[in-house]
Length: 446
Image 1 (cartoon, rainbow, N blue to C red):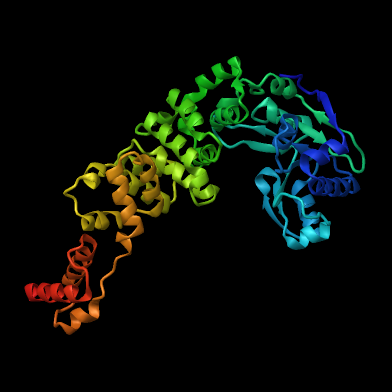
Image 2 (cartoon, rainbow, N blue to C red; image 1 turned 90 degrees about the vertical axis):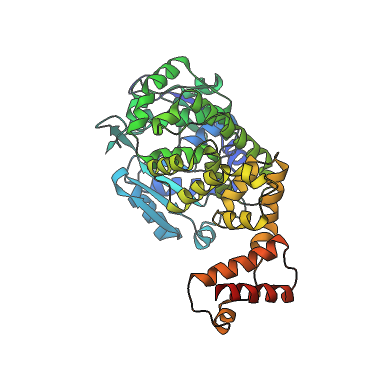
């Protein structure tokens, strides 16, 4: 795991290699930042995932910098000089510089891909006051900052020099060897106790890169699993959301489920083969499905609950601190799955299905279709609802009911629902037939 207090140097990167890997525009952006840091006499480093992915020859334009100096003040100064906005988080000494069109023009970056925002952090040390608690931080040196990180493969940095290459790679945890060996390894034995979210990240990175979790790290991880109970719902939710955005989320979910990690979140959070199978099906159908990464992740959240009853789904949603909108949508999804036999039964009327599905979100409907794609009766009826039934409306409205002499009340909704249902079930097919049924219903109501 490297030597405490030392800063091993590994492969260096020439300007040509960096330009090829990151693109000329991103490299010019880095050079501008380095030049400004040099003018301020601040040591600055490109750190973490982007350095790891340079070694793995994977595209990554998430530019994270660590400074041995005031990162917030530095980011704000860049915004004042070049434009854009900063988002600051003083307790951890971090800031985001968000580039707008004016900043991009002022920086003369060209048309190549560049990040929408750049992260800056003051090099720091961390001390965890209790297991799973957020750390107390103090300014530190780069080697201290790297050694506080989650895994050796992420504890890498490039010393960014103004106007000179090659840039040396700093590797205090011997992450370079772990990349060559395709291993996920923690930097110290307390890592998962200090921050149990690293349990989720270990499996996420292992899946993404095709790595294995190193044996001693796996032992430490297994022993720390009960610590997940101490995590806030927000922190767990964030990790699960990242997993659902991975290329093969079902593999990560299956690995976590095998270790009963979900039961540490909530006793009723039981993820089985059904959920992982549905996530795989979602991935296979993604190219044909409309929506962006947020939409896909939202569908994934629903599929996590495909084996969970509605009441338990609400309890788990509360534990994770899901938004009311997402929580209600997942509950509707669970309720829908409990009624699939009824949905597919020949005796169930289209109007009854419509009344039931009107209370279910569009995302829950899409998720339920994924779960029932092989049940042709259910699939056909849900698709009919989405394409046709839910759009059916009566030509008669409340004004007609007033003119018919009915006093306002629940009877209005009852009559209008019956008229709409008759259209959906094919019992009426014209305005004349609707009028006849309307007069009959009014007469019965009187």
